[in-house]
Length: 245
Image (cartoon, rainbow, N blue to C red; front, side, top):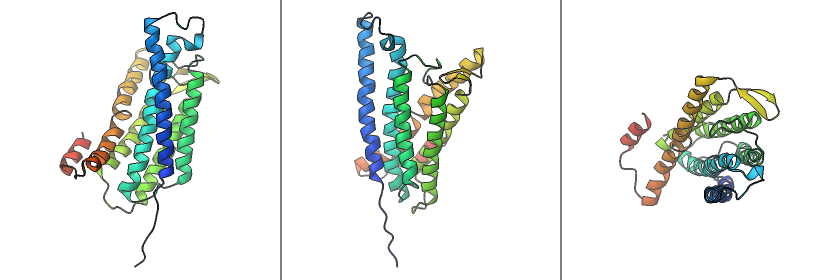
């Protein structure tokens, strides 16, 4: 009987972990500066790119999409390989996912303080970045689903279902909320207007919290908590009920 040998790709996991730490520090330092601006409103007077209105979206984007986003990718890439008993489908897609995500973050760190914004909360980045984010979601999903198809573990643990749900829902939320008409390289107008624009924006905003900040971490908890406790999950049936609603 031939013994199959394979190795997990831990390098991509480490890259995302290092990025998580870096952007966590950056995002929290910007948040600290914003806190000082509450106490000393004139602290950055005369410096437009350090004004509260420009730093606030930089802070939220850095903490949510740079800090938390990289943490999600690190956790998913680490746990998926072990749950599926397979190396990620494509090392190239993994690298594109990592470097593409970091370039988007750097682009946001430059353009938001300069005042380029769509003025949509948690979706301030302009249309070129919206397209790039959608592409990165596709790359991530392609890599994850490709790994699922080549898995050596027949059963799909509940954490994987949470990861799939994250990929699908976040992609749908981002694409539909970001539908806009470009008028220049860094300016666009939403295809929605008035009440419809506000409705779609907060359909996106609230669900971004639900599906970007919550769903993937529920999957990660189903993997890491039993590992840390050195005990199997109490009831697998309850986990399926939990996922279903």
